[in-house]
Image 1 (spheres, rainbow, N blue to C red):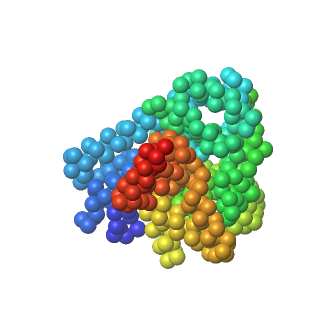
Image 2 (cartoon, rainbow, N blue to C red):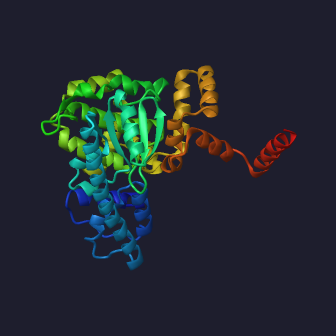
Image 3 (cartoon, rainbow, N blue to C red):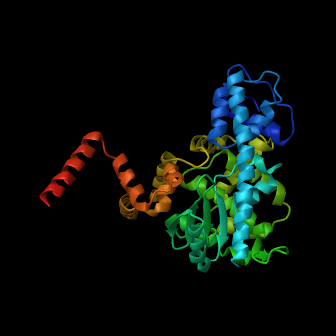
Amino acid sequence: MVIRYDFEYLIHLIYCAIHDLQPEEKPEQISFENVFLLGKEHEVGNIAFLSVEKLENKPDAELYNEWQVFYYHSVQRDARQLAQYSDLCNLLSENKIRWTEAQGTVTKTYYPTHDSRMMSDIDLIVDVSSLGKIESLMVQRGYEVKKIHENELNVYPENETEIEFHTEYFSEFYKGSLLRYSGAINSPFDHAVQSEENEYKYVQSDTYYYLYSLLHTIKHFEYAGCGIRRILDLYFVEKALGDKVDRKVINNALEQYGFAENANKLFKVERYWFEGEKPDSDLIETIIDILQSGNHGNSDIKLRNSLRRDADDGMAKAKLRRVKNFLFPSLEELYEGHPDYKEKGYSLFRCRLYRALSHLNPKQILKMFRFFNRIKKSN
């Protein structure tokens, strides 16, 4: 790879870290600060630091120290999350609730070390009939609990990682063209077997965990964007499971539900960045999307992709859906578009209120408060 841009040097540092190679020294036109900030935004700065340590010409002392602290914080965070995860799984098993893992807690095991892969939340899949019991257990522990919809529960332990209890791989929130995710794969316990060491723990089959991981990444890419870390996930999942999966099952799902094109794009980027393959010229837009999205996507990409889906669905139908979604977005949609709302655990009402206020200028807000004040006085 000829390094011309800051992001290319970040990818180079990650590549060298995962392949245990000596990285090239930073080209003169590259900014260490920009590389670090991009690494933090995409939650891969910790892996990149493993290569930075090997450089002869390191960043200046202040930035190097900040990067090092970021790395050690990711190690500490991983240790806390693993302890929290273990405690949580023990609690479920003690209360005879069957569960299976999803996303980060499994994907971590495919990385060279657990702390190499940063994790935003803890995702578990349970039976829908268990949600009420789980909610009671979490409340008893003093945790804040929010029911996203009838099939999903979010838990916010103070000073710990958020926990999400799902009952399917993909919820019914993904309607219209996004409904095909739940069509391609669902009913997680049908694709899992009981663990030998714990009768309440179920382990996903290699084929269906691989398919779920791929579709989960595509979902983010199609909805609001996916970042570098998710492409790195594809590399490690493919490396760990690629030779063990039933390709016929996977290829049939990708073709039948229209995922093959985007799966091909994402794997081309993965092979270019992390396996050293030559890039295709048609990857430019995909790479730009990945870089601009950050780790969790953003509202600009979400809007653009939504407009593209509207064009596919027909304009009249699209306009009606757009008005409805704008006026009455679900909590999950709001959390997808505003990660800070999710981080703070805002309720549906509060999210909709803040979102509405963000679309008003100061004069409109003042006018609105004066209007409500007149109503209050008249009563």
